[in-house]
Structures are given as C-alpha cells and as structure tokens.
Length: 342
Image (cartoon, rainbow, N blue to C red):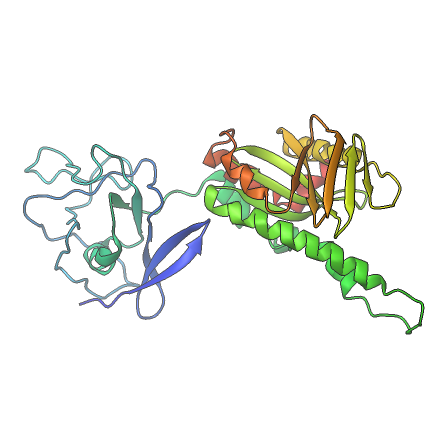
C-alpha cells in the first residue's frame, strides 16, 4: 500500500490540501473552493477496472487498489479528447457523472500522476465534501506564466505596508538633545497607520481581492495600497491623523491646526498614473486612519473617503472584473517594470 500524507496550506484565500509521498514529493492537491473549467466529472463504472499505469520511473510504488466512498476507477488512457477526459468504459456508453451532474462541481483534485489515483482518493476521502472532480492539473494561464517568469527584484508582491517608511524608522538616531524631537517618532506613527490599513485590505483576500503595498512610481512618488478585485481597481492613499481633527474641503485637507494640503489632488493624480500603467479604470481612495473627528465640508465626487475599519465595504461592491481579469491585472501590477510607463 502506498503511504501518502495530506498537508493543508493556504493558497489565494482558500485552503488547499497537498497529497505527498513520504519523501515530500507532491502527487496531487485538492481545492475545495472551486472546480477547474474543462475538467470532466468523476466517472464511476459499475465494476472497477484495473487502472493502466503510465511509464513513470520516478514513482515505482504501487497504489492501494482499494477504493473509498466517492472515488472512481480510471480505465485505459483515452485515444482522443481533451486532457483529463474520462474514457468510455465500454459498458455505460460514455462517461457518466455521478457527482455534480446537476448542481455543478465545487471542488477539484489535481492529479499529477495517474498511477496514484486510488491512493490519492483514499487519502482524501475524509476531506472530500460536496461535489468534486478529478483530473490533471490545469494548464498555466498567461498570468501564471508572467508570475513564474518575473524576477524577484521586480516583484512588488512581497512589499510590506509602508515599505519605504521602514527605512526611516530604522535610521540611527542622532546625538541626544534635551529639546530635540526624535524624527523617527513621526515615521513610526505613519508606519502604524499604513500597517493598520494594509492589514484590513489584506483581509479582503478571502473575497477574491488582491492588494499590493508601496507601489513605486517614477519621480519618487508611490501608491500606498493598490486594491484589485471584483469591484474594480482602487489606488488608496493613507492619511495618518492620530487623534487629530481632519477637515476635508475638496481639493484640500486640513489636519488639526496645520495648513491646508491638496491631498485630494495628489490622490487623483496617483490613480490617473495607475490607470495609465494598467490600461484600466482606477478609482482614487482617501483612507483616514486614527482621526479623532472627520469633517467633510465639500465632499469629493470622484474620490472615495473611508476610515479605518471600513475597508470591508469593498467586498460588497458590484462585480466589475472576473477572476481571470483580477489575476491578469495583479500579475501586471506586481511587475515593477509596469510602472515605468506611468
């Protein structure tokens, strides 16, 4: 009997179960959140056949031929048809869907080696719920290929919220002075605001949204957070206002007793540059973090104003982009070279 190990991992907001050999080599994985287009449902003939094992010198172990509830036995390799199609077993007159025929399939098992089909299904039997399909892994999309070919130095996905502020916080302090104010104190306050808002935006990952932090723009400017999801693309500008009264009168913003600053104009400009780089509509967002009071005198019609704790409202926006469009835009936006034309 082939000994397989099932290990859970988080992938794109969902839980993926990896099935691996004792040496750590993955032979399959199970995504319960959705099925793969083009894959055929599981075929269950009346009597199990002996599966035909392909030539796979890297995996000499024999699988367990005992089936599990909800599993399927595969016949010989089909002579034609799309990859992953279930062959005709000669008795049913064609492939027969027993799970998900009328309701659609909710999960998919990506099988790397056909010879481990029964062993994989036996190992995953306690974890399979609802409808599911089984077949080869999906063909990589254009976004997947772009992500795999991206150089690590050009990948913006690992950027932390307030990435550029970390350098200011880590600067060595000057000689102590009685009346001198530590410049790192302001940097730490701004960093906390970026981290707080960034954590809220990252929670939208479960709803199909993707977020990039500290996107650099030519000229030394940056987009604090770029949010890409079903509801559209948003360029978020963070305004740290810890215990301050913030007054918004388009196009100026006044924090406490300070003078007016044209932050709305800057927010719009950043969204326009993102629109140029991504070739899609990008809406500006002004995010106020930590303000004691927010007063909007002249509300900006084209800029969305939110406070901390309100980022979850993006999950309720109407659908604008499909999952494939979101993946393509995210792959394009995470490439540093994309922003050179903004």
